[in-house]
Image 1: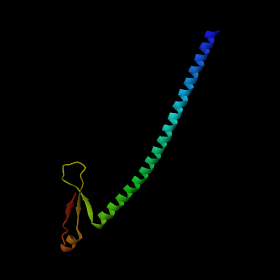
Image 2: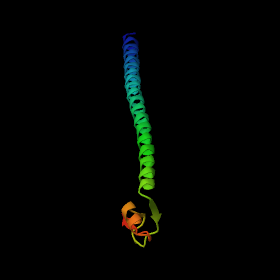
Image 3: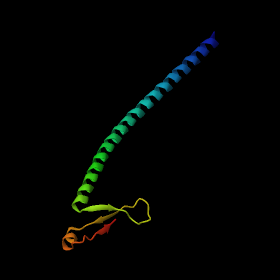
Image 4: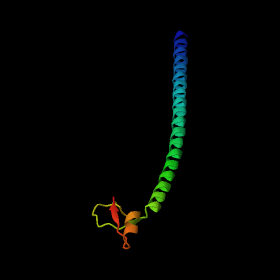
Length: 105
């Protein structure tokens, strides 16, 4: 009878330890989820503000291109993905009927 009581006691203790470990895992996972949600919220805010900045930068570039009469041109540069731009400067355009262009990179 004492062997059975001892076995019963060990089994109950093992079940309690398993329960405690499972509760600890749930608590840890819950904290990780809270942290992940906070990080996701921060990332979404960062993405939103970055997109606004991108839109503003694109608009600004278009305004500057228009003000300085910039046109995109093909380049003989062998480096890939390098765009060259030609700028017609207003003082050059008014000084000479033939439009002189200055290349900017």
